[in-house]
Length: 391
Ligand SMILES: *Cc1c(COP(=O)(O)O)cnc(C)c1O
Image (cartoon, rainbow, N blue to C red):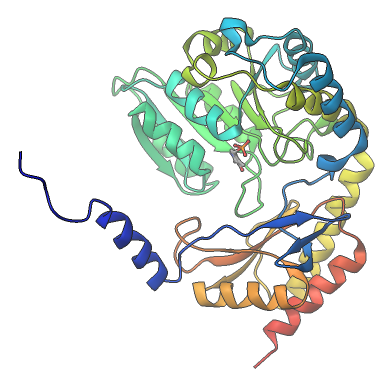
């Protein structure tokens, strides 16, 4: 056989150089956590406004201690998938506790939010299923839907009339079932979906409602257990990597839905069980989160204050009503320039550009946490306004 000449990595070179040309090449930066909301990047101390550690639990003494205790008791790894021999005793208690807190009949722990979404959706949807999906859904939900190779109807962001129109127009077309897939708190706009209407539509059109509670778990709902807490949601999904401060994910719902996932969700069946350190951290977080109403109230008060300051100065923050506040600047260049300006002023806030957000909607995405002081917020708003009024 004649050897082929040429560059087998040509497609990679082309992609990377194209991204470089369009100023869309992403790169990893090394970062050291420091005290409170501070981090050190390239030797410079910055206030971190892009962390999902909304309650500061990642470095809470009880969370760290419980993780260490679990390692001492169970080891560093769980050594197998749950159905083989990885189902160490603490899973059962944790899942019971989680179900009770979610006010749901049952719950199941999973590896990550991303992995859970790409496992749960293809389990629920077959090729004859219709999925109605919010236009701003997270990439992991989109990938999960793609893996299911089902029919997809995307509805305009939070547009319940559009969703109902789609549900109506797809009746009687022979779909095996219909899923409605949405987030509760949207990760890029920081706004919320209307779960009352979604529940009603799911009921009226006999559809399965799947809600990703990633950014609401720890922050909204009774005991901070998410917007889906205590509601009639068929499948609620959440992560422990954000407000819970560590790692891992969950699904909650009816007992038979959870039994179905144990049997039919490949990401659950064919992946190593969460390691003991993570289970310890989740255990501690579930103990702490219900008692943090004070922190949650203060976080919302601070977010409201930041939005008010920004609006007064003429900034656009989309429909944010949560701890996530997009500061929309339009062009990629503006977003990058503002991000660099903030960094020069001691603030870490990354630019979010297409394709993560629509063209012309580039932004700085601010995440507020319980670790931010009022002084941090004053410096943030002052710096943003300084950039806006700079020539
Ligand atoms: C972060 C996020 C995920 C992924 O969760 P991980 O545990 O980080 O993998 C899933 N869905 C949404 C909406 C998210 O924001």
